[in-house]
Image 1 (spheres, rainbow, N blue to C red):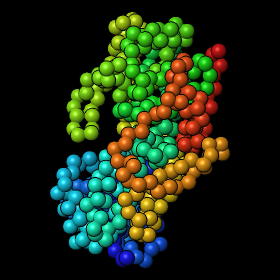
Image 2 (tube, one colour):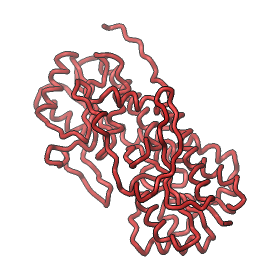
Image 3 (cartoon, helix red, strand yellow):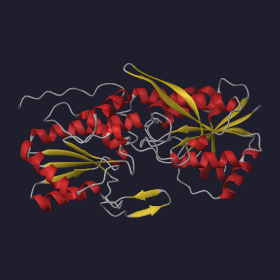
Image 4 (tube, rainbow, N blue to C red):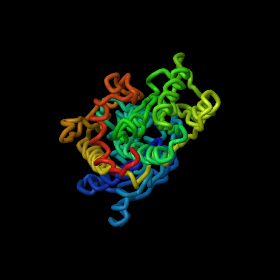
Amino acid sequence: MNGNLLIVHGGGPTAVINSSLYGSIMEAKNHEQIGRIYGALGGTAGVLSEKFVDFSRVSQSEIELLKQTPASSIGTSRTPLEIDDYENMIAVMEKHNIRYVLFNGGNGTMDACGKFYRAAMEKDIFVVGIPKTVDNDIAITDHCPGFGSAARFIAQATAEISQDVRSMPIHVCIIEAMGRNAGWITAAAALAKKDEFSGPHKIYLPEIAFDEERFLEEVFMLYKKHSCAVIVASEGLKKADGSPIVDPIMKIGRSVYFGDVGAHLAEVVVKRLGIKARSEKPGILGRASILYQSPVDRDEAILVGAAACKAAVLEKSGIMIGLERISTSPYSSKLIEIPIEEVILNERTMPKEFFADNDLGVSDKFIEWCRPLIGGELPEFAWFNK
């Protein structure tokens, strides 16, 4: 069936969301059934306001830049959608002869993808999802495009901060990692650890109830042993009753704006232990950094974007393209098609086998699973003060 293609981005950007966009565009050019290749400017809000970029008229040299461009080149949003909005989007598709629609995003976007698919089932519109999230919390798929690069960033940042703290061991440093309910990014900091003395010395995940007294005891023992400590803590740490350790500043829909967990923990260390402490919060710098983009992440993002386009052209609908791991060493994966109904808002947290009741808090099994996704080993550092 002939028609135009529309690509829609949703949710927080990543270092490789534009790589998936690139994959979809390049695949679309191989199919004569596709006329125009549109990108919605500003996510679903751009669809409703009919603001599109026509990639059919963009030079190939500029399209190639997508692979090395951070965040979303066409913009994204977390625009809340009502039932009428899906009907209005269908009207926009029909007006612009759009028959193939790709939603690229996280859990919220896959929810919108599923709802749009259901609304458009009686129409000649084919809807496919492309997973994207640094949080790595989309169900079924082994991992999500965007996570590998965020994991590489937090691991490298932790390694460099640890080297700094180790050089002048006088304080505790708390690194706050992104991840509301799932500790994937936080856990990835474990890849920085090279030996008993290098950081991180302890990792605190949101899946495990946070105990302030135990935290203080562990920090004190680490400081006593090393004269310093590097701690990585999730922004979503919760108490045993499920409440956050720092009250959220604001909540809009699914988006929670947390208080500053790193600063709070550093303050607790200073006040309760009398030890100098400071916090570091890479925040959004870590979710879309091209400097630390993982080549594995980029290449898989391109493949997923291309596969989504191809599936839509084959008139498949109501699916999300996922990744299934074939082997960890050597690393290989394959693309799979997942019914969107199995994905919608089914948040995937870290499994128990990735936790460890040890000094670090993360198991060797997780480190083995995560290591190939960052696209190569971290740089080695010289260290003589042993």
